[in-house]
Length: 518
Image (cartoon, rainbow, N blue to C red):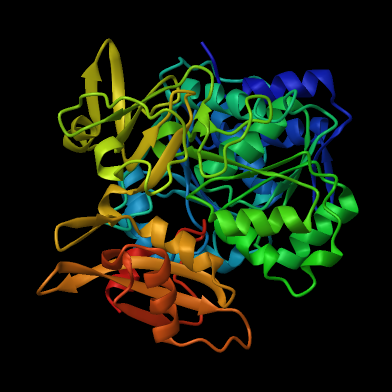
């Protein structure tokens, strides 16, 4: 039996007086952390909230997120993380679907919860900060905890995050204690020699998202490191904090690294303290990676994962080497394959990444499928969706990622694009990421995204959305000519739209469904 929070308790017993969480306002030692975790667990139990009851965390990256998360698990409950940018329509589904009894949030968000409360099972609202009405102040909610942890089985549910819902209604993902414990320890091992008590991590990835939750928060706390959470993403603040506190680890999404390199004073910062800079949540353009590494004495290591896989499945590690353009090799305990539509495994290429003239991508690419201890139990209340997401083969339960890729004989995997994003134009497949990579190399382009739009003659055609660097003077025709000079003619964008910014989720993913509607 294992409870995810037991790994934090182990750290507390080893280094109670060491700093665990540091913000501008306060520092919590591991002993402080555990006292409040135990207090929140006791507060739940005093109000009749216990085993398998849901607690929704509707917070940005503040220490109370960590306290609520592990306090809920210590009491045997299930965490339902919610994006603090969500409003009434979005949280209504999450609260009703999960059956959450408690919501922990900010005072400004209490009216959003109150607006949907009568249609949910919410019994208690707890605020981080003073609030009017019947919401309880976080400090007053805490009980007298004894530090005991409710025993849970490996396959008991621990966290129920929701998919982003960009293509439909968000689905609750059932992640167990074993899923998350195994993946957090695996994520901690990705840094050279593993994370230890000498490490400090920049907590800029939102904690409601599985990447920030597992790879940043839990991996750090399980290993005795110091976690520096930031409630909002601000490139200047992040750069200053890394330099001044000499942080050793960071993880971010591609958009964050792109923001960093486009700061007018980017070259003024010293990031030499970083021993690992990880990136996930989508493929990082090679040009962004190159420019970051030219500016700083730090390398970016790309990885891959999904909410349904807790999340990490692949990573480029310093020990195994790095291949730019690859998501890396599978982490310990995780298996991956490239399969065709008949679930037949496709053979690896000799070595990647492939140049366009090495092989036809359509001949070597297939869907990436994953098996391992990190793979979700299923979608909450959706047996048909769960069945559709898995294939049983060779004694394993394989999760269909929906991502298209290939792999090489050294075990490195490469993501070409999302299956749903592939563009079919006049019978040819166009992978948007290939066109986007080229656009990022243009000196006038600061950000870019490519989608397929309807076309009577070709079925679909390619459209590019471009954000230019300040004071750039570039035309649609120049962008098109640039693409024609560097790509097969059918891949070039027939339309180019210049925009001030791309629509993105809180975790930095471009919302391509919005672009298709423009």
